[in-house]
Image 1 (tube, rainbow, N blue to C red):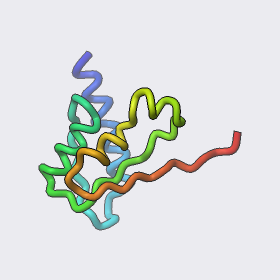
Image 2 (image 1 turned 180 degrees about the horizontal axis):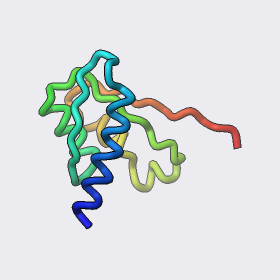
Image 3 (image 1 turned 180 degrees about the vertical axis):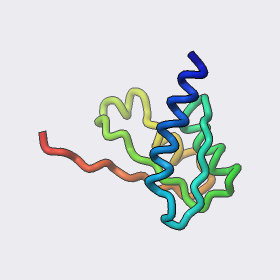
Image 4 (image 1 turned 90 degrees about the vertical axis):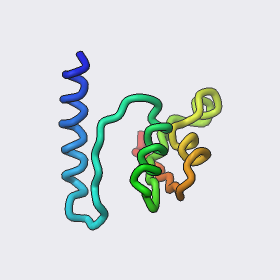
Length: 92
């Protein structure tokens, strides 16, 4: 199971990274396991990132209050600037 997960994650990451290839900033990819917020903050520190950009989940207020979002945890724990982007709303 672990090999399948890692292979699928690597394939998905390669697709996303290729979309940003040639934009200017250096693209660094690495598959990690653990708390997403913790791992993103750790990676930003390890890479001496100038900026951490994350998407907000857009799941609504009640879920944010009860569970908290990854973007919020990153904002509160990162020692680097964080830009949180809200996804486009699609009409229902």
